[in-house]
Image (cartoon, rainbow, N blue to C red; front, side):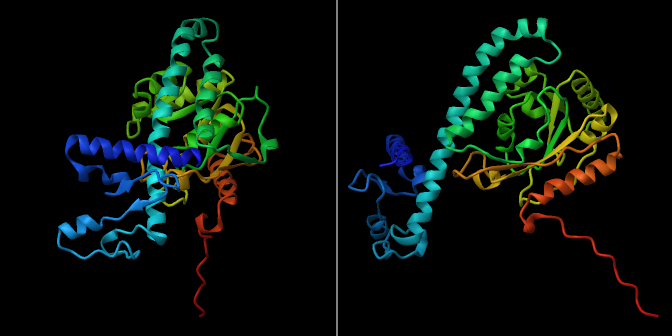
Amino acid sequence: CSFWTLVEATACKSLEFLALWKGKEKRHGRFCRHRRWSWNEDRARCCESRVQTEQRQGGSSDAKAGGSEGGWVCAGEGAENKRKKTIGGVIGVYWAVFVALWALLLYIPMLILHPFVKAFDGRKRRVHDFISRYFLKVPLLAMGVRPKFIGRENLPPADEAVVYVANHQSFLDIFCFGFIGVHHKFVSKIEILRLPVIGNAMTMKGDVALLRGNRKSQLKTYKDMLNTLKTGSSLAIFPEGTRSEDGRMRKFSSGAFKAAKATGVRVVPMTILGTREAMPTSTLLPIRRHSITVVVHKPLDSTTRTEQELSDAARQAIQSGLPPALRDAPETTPLKEAE
């Protein structure tokens, strides 16, 4: 009996008990779908059908035969799909609880050390960066996932300030940056920095906040980005600005490339794969464990390119790591009509 099987059965039993205790038996079906999970010889791998409920309602039931009418299937492919959804929901809930506790655990030493870090290393705040790196790494490892890196040799030296740009398909993309092994600051929407504990930690760490749609805030964000790069810290930015629902890259904003050009630092494009399958944009929590791959492309020199050329080169590099179906369609020149 695997660990996740035990987790699955424990969660369903807990939900069933809670529903019965509240007298609302049908309300707990979000994960278990009105099923009765039992500890049998298969260790919580079998569910009983809703035959009795169907009979009470005066309808016919084909659950025993493995039919799919009404969505109630306890055998065959339908039961397997529902079991996978159940496991996905359980994994998401347990992962969220783990992340919350892990964030609180690391927030305490950050809060204690913050006055000393601000006094002796107020510009880079490397102690906070070190703690933040482990906050990002451990949640993925707790899911049984360690991102595979391709092109790690393209990563610049740890003491070089650069701008990391990557495609954005999932909330889990952020956690992949914990494995690159360098100090960096995120450019994040201000709503994230307003979250309790995590937002406070990001503020103490020196991450840059962005209020989208506000011109004054955008100017301040740009100045903060320049100051961060000038102090020797790297920036991690998702130039699309938001997550892609279908995996295709959205239009890039110019802020990352404008800051790189102004300070003369290199731009490092990165392609992140597999996070959308683990946690799509339509879900608040991970729904499955899935392998993650990070492709690090060769750094781009900002001193020999314009802002637009930097943006185009970075987009082309990131797209080269995506599956062909998710790349931009090549532009075609219309043929002139024959005279």
